[in-house]
Length: 97
Length: 203
Ligand SMILES: [Zn+2]
Image (cartoon, rainbow over all chains, first blue to last red; front, top):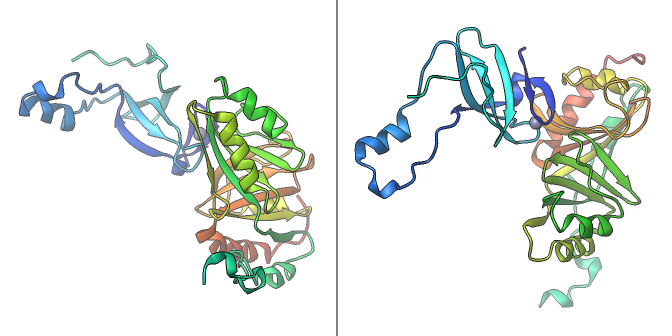
């Protein structure tokens, strides 16, 4: 089984984790001012790269903390893990939209 | 009839989640010993370990909270288990929960933090014996060798697909506390007994 490193607990089996989608998707500042299209874009539209992708994961069966990981979507290799609030590593930084 | 008129002897006897299982545990091979530790007081504590309340909380507990992930600290009758960077599980003797809960709540004061009595949430098992690591290894990927998991190690993980807190209690890593959700306790007990049948020696 693949091991994923929790930034708190260290390497654990993949089955202890849940996936939380793309990381660093900021909540819109003025929600009321958004058009339906912009709101839908915030809710449903996500990047879908082949290669390094910054994602949220939660160590559900361990410390239950959310953290971020950069995962290569082509190989499923976890390239980096970092705690919430820590900057995204340069490694695999995606082009800004 | 109001509650205060019920004499204690008339109250129903509480049943622990593994009441009646000891005979089955006793039938396990001699290389492991399993027993339930009933009615441990358990408090979930949320507080910022570097915040203003941390000092007052440490005073109540008689020890600073362990901040190293996956560790625990013993302080007198209390066992302080690290569950997360701002979360701990405090194990205390039966009946000591309310007093400790009140004292911790006073220590936290108006600052951010929470104390919750979760005594009924988990059942506590004591597992010991030379084959106890071998037994856990049948359903758990954590390396419990003393070089990796010294005394005091406290991991939250899956054992046989069930969420378990494992606390290492001695330096040979052959004496463990296992905490399992009460609703999974009988499943986990049945798994332990099944996994233990073929044990013959230590590891
Ligand atoms: Zn963790």
